[in-house]
Amino acid sequence: MNVVLNSFRGMFSDSPRALFEALVARGDDNSYTWLAAPDRLGDFPAGTTTVEFGSADAVAALEAADVVVSNDHIGFDWDKSPGTTYLQTWHGTPLKRIHNDVLWAPEGRLAYLDTEIARWDALLSPNPVSTPRFRKAFGFTGPVHETGYPRNDVLSSPERDALRAQVRAELGIAEDATAVLYTPTWRDDQVFNAADGGPQHTFPLDLDEFAAALGSDHVLLLRVHQMVSERLTLPEGSPIRDVSRHPDVRFLYLAADVLVTDYSSTMFDFAVTGKPILNFTYDLEYFSGELRGFYFDLAEAAPGELLHTSDEVLAALAELHRTPWVPTERYNRFRETFCSLEDGHATERVLELFFPAGPPGPGGAPTHDGKRR
Image 1 (cartoon, one colour):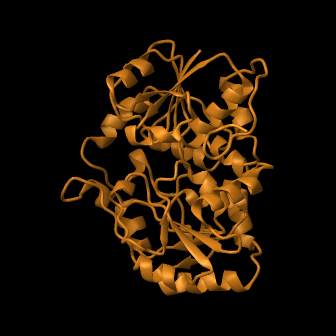
Image 2: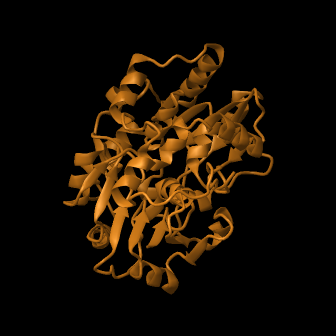
């Protein structure tokens, strides 16, 4: 069987990666081809077959595939063969409105993406809450499988502590330091309306001052959305670790001790770890009412109280540093609502559906860099 995989326009990451690693570990007699961005080739394990994302070779690979696995819109033209199965894993629980439900989109963008959705044969859903929203937003009438996300299995893995130590060591985070992962979402207007045609990103606070205010016993890990990561510039000597190009965010979840985000779907994945989440919602009214729109009231459903200023965020981080973290009732309710399927076995469920078991083969658990132990 010829399997072609794609994640975020050519990265080695997310649920397609988790499924690939499980299939390789199982030893199935398949051929695997990844769509790869040229600057991401070093992230793929040695010996992995890749074709350049968007190239003629990528089109040929997709058109010859028995199975296509992608976590996002592929975003370039190709003709799906009659015998091909296209599994769309998607890449997050939607708080922000998506596709047909958004308040604004560039002219023609949604119509073009509809041609991609028409190729999907099945869609994964991380939880029962997301399923009807996916169906409506994408206009998708095919099967939606509530499996949880394969990418999140590692967060419940028996090896999570070892992986945490490995990633922290590679990032130079001291064992006793508190790692704060900051994952602001991207703003559609800044990405699509940039004056020079390139995605932009602005921050509501001075990042260097914020990192300095955390103190020497904290490390600020900054990860901006892949749509804008190439535009991020930090001054030399900045006290911030830019982890925007880390190949797979799930390993950063393990390395971090607390998540600070605004409206990013990272909050739903990070909650699997049971670690604290702070929502820094400085532009809540504009983002929810004018720019993108939400599917539910974040103030009511968020894992904690919403914070509106950098001082409030600093105070909350200081409190977490002083007092051992105990999940609150609303945090537990958030997990029950959005993480009920994240039990460490999503990959198994997806393999049972789309890749019936083959003969056992050599393998070993994957490390965060894709190599095998």
